[in-house]
Image (cartoon, rainbow, N blue to C red; front, side):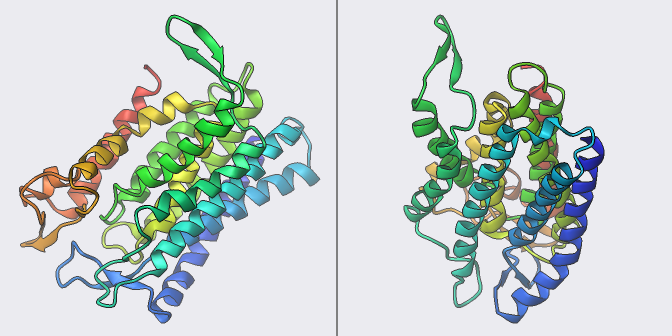
Length: 340
């Protein structure tokens, strides 16, 4: 399995490396460009880099399935029908949710200030459909550990209630903490990598098929994000757009649900949950990004309506410094999943 997995990761990596420059040229040609708000002069940069990551993820995953199907030597475990079912249902869900983000990216303001996007009520409604593939195959484990009562099997409540809430919540939650070069990609590298490693070292026991699926999904998207970060890091040649944030939300939900890793995913989501509370304070109308001032990024607001505002409010930090802080913060929460 290790050789096949590493091969699939390399396929994902080089797919993104190859596709992204082409995607950049194509997006510029069709006018899918927005202003990079935190830069001097607000240069126009193509948006919707999530489509490149999706291509890498899909190609890498199909490579894995192909190799384990036609060259099964020593890989009988991963050919289990349950694992294959989880992988394919997760892939369908992730593709669906990414295209919701892509539609959001397509709606650009005439002044190219930003992507005006879908309305707030449309986003959860459209992402809800992406939960269906995971629901119909009854992904995950419906037995929960409840204080006092112990382990409780909630049966159909899990696929019919918990899965839709998880998918919709994760997609829209990840979408909120964005707006800085490399932020979404950098944090995504940390939590997909951490979840993959955690699932790998906890593969034995009752959840072997579930954890195996989580490892495969995590590894393939991790390598895709590493490749995309080369183009998205400061100064970004392409912005991720909602297509990537929604993809990452779908990935996070799929790994948590399929791999029975809800607790670990919830810990890694703490920065996003805090961001949700802060965005609610601003009635979801305040932007995370600021404006360029003397080499630093300054907030548009006097109060804190987003986690980055803690730094941009002072006007003392560069965009790179702010992004590095959040990547390190996510790394800290990634360490907590091993001890909590």
